[in-house]
Every structure is written in structure tokens, then in C-alpha cells.
Image (cartoon, rainbow, N blue to C red; front, side, top):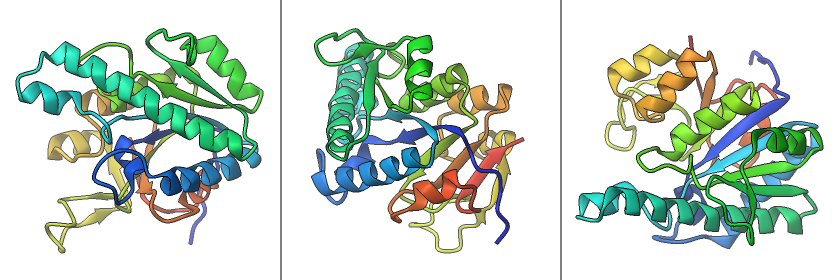
Length: 239
């Protein structure tokens, strides 16, 4: 198997659903422990690691707004859910001896630092795992867009998009067993085909700034380390 470039500074995008494991709602402590162990292994490799985390395991703003709730209110509630997830991940990491900082796009000084780009970069340089919560701080923007924006701001070499499948497919592989899996795909083809890799705003940001995305299976233990090491797993989205 051909080995690609290994990375020095990465941004990991974790969905809220990744933390709920087999539960229907909330946070599965065993899953969080497993993710924290993988992240600590990556940090011990000398990789500078930022994490953007979603909140869909607790609250989905878009879903709530489709049922009549004001969209801005629903989105702000979703941002608060991401902070809960960030605190759970921080707790698991620090119990394993990793140094972390949680930064939020909405000020909540009793819980976390405000997101300041230069401060976040300094934390990365000092070997701390930076967990970025609260989305962009604005309604109507997803945590996928947050991941693209923060990765560009912080000079990450790649976005690692952790999912429940082993890459990007032409169709949902759970619904169609004949769906084609891509090893590589261009940003523009993701947009044209309407593939659910990240939302269109996030893909466009990555395309405009030549920031590659690696979509891979989070459920297989050790995959975060494998991706960071440059192993050829998952799907690479690039030019």
C-alpha cells in the first residue's frame, strides 16, 4: 500500500453523533474514552491537533427550525450543545494526561476561552489539543463550515472528517450495496453530484483555499493515527 504524506498540523471534524455511539441520544462515555485515547496517541506523535465538534447528539438546530422554532434561536441552542460535547472530550483527554484548551466562538468565560486565532495557534505550538466549540458563533452556519474556516485560519494542512463510513460513496452504501466508493474525488465533483461529504459552503471554502479533506471511518480504532501518518485509507477530496 502506497504511503502518502504525513501531517504536522491537522484539524479533526467530529460530529456530535460520533460521541453517542449506539445510544439514541447523548454521550456514550466509552466512545468518548476511545476517541480521547486515539487523539492522545496522535498528539504523542508530535502532531499539532485542533478539533471542531458538532452537537447533533444533543440538539439539531436545523431540525428544530423545520418544526417551527425560530432558526436563529435553534442554531444558538445547537451551539450550546457543541460546548457540552467539547467539555466531555476535554475531560476524557485530561484524565489521560493530555493538555487541552477549549475555545468557544461565543464567550462563556466560566467554561472556556474565547476563540482567538493567535492564542489557538500558540496552544497548538505548545502541544495542547485545541477543542473548538460554539460553531462560528453565527446562526445559519454549520460545524462543517466552522471546520473549514478554522482549518484555514489556523494553517492546518488537512481536514480529517471522521464519519461512520470508510469514505465517500456515489450513494448511501447502507441503502445501495452497489454504491461506488471513491479513493479520490475533486471538490467540484462533490458539489455537482450533491455528495454529503460536508455542506456546500464548507466544500467551497476548502476548494478556494486548496485545503484537502480526508473522509474516513472513525469507528475502526486507530484510524485517526493511520490517517495522520499518511496511510492510504478513506477518501481524499482535493483538486
